[in-house]
Image (tube, rainbow, N blue to C red; front, side, top):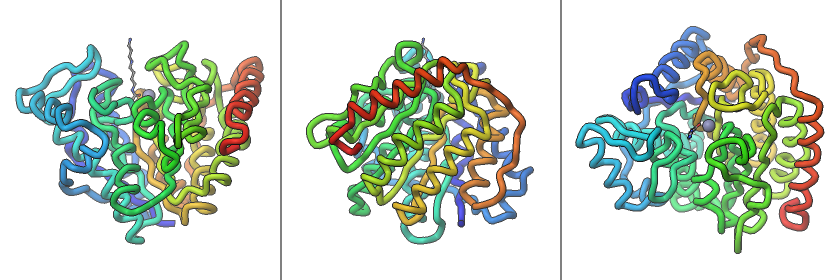
Length: 350
Ligand code: Q9C
Ligand code: ZN
């Protein structure tokens, strides 16, 4: 398999404020780990995206909002929410993050690579049509999905989002269409930002059944996620037969993340990636693009990024010895949640 790393120096120039968890060092450290692992000499091709027309951003976001982000950077920076702000580089970085996704798609569809990891910042999955939210400005994965539909005539895109937080912006972008199937794993919104992503949010109109949420209990780990993949994600992929798979990767599902309370390990995350690659192999002609969203333990973002590229390139996965045993009561809760999601989606895609 051929893998591509999409990266741009601008991704490290955006800064919300010194000390903010969504910081440039996340990528700086991950890129160093990728170089040290010699992945770039072992088949991973690194690519820098070029400029894109702003129309691709307007496919998801209002012109007024895009202009507000641009103006804020032109003036040196501004806060959009108490924890989501710009500096002078944010607008260019955010457009380049979106460009990373559409560049990856063009290259995958041209057969230049099987798959890609867009290691970008700012992240995107919380960004809404007209507002910045949760450290996100432009919704990179939503822009990519819309680009697949509008520019490449793709009819079915499956988005799997395993960031620890619910991808509210992505869900809302495609809530009433069956052309994009959103499947979100996240810590239950009763106990974590952004407070949405409940199981009964199943989509509306044509999109009914094409939005699937798995709000996991705090402490949910590898066993819970892998069972949910077997019982929900795999059957969804088999029923939907996506032409392209997009993944919102968030290392804040890891047990040591400072912002969340989930329980994944690095090997568990690598297993999820392995499953997604198999679905891509089976249904989407190997076409899969992974977008970095959150993850605030720098060592986990680094090791996880190395593992992701190893998986995408078909190389052996470096083992990192992080351990976490989820509470049996949590696993029982997950079984009940899976039953409930099956019921809610029965007669739709499941
Ligand atoms: N009291 C991503 O992982 N926390 N964003 C807000 C408000 C926001 C996380 C806390 C966490 C956003 C991309
Ligand atoms: Zn997150």
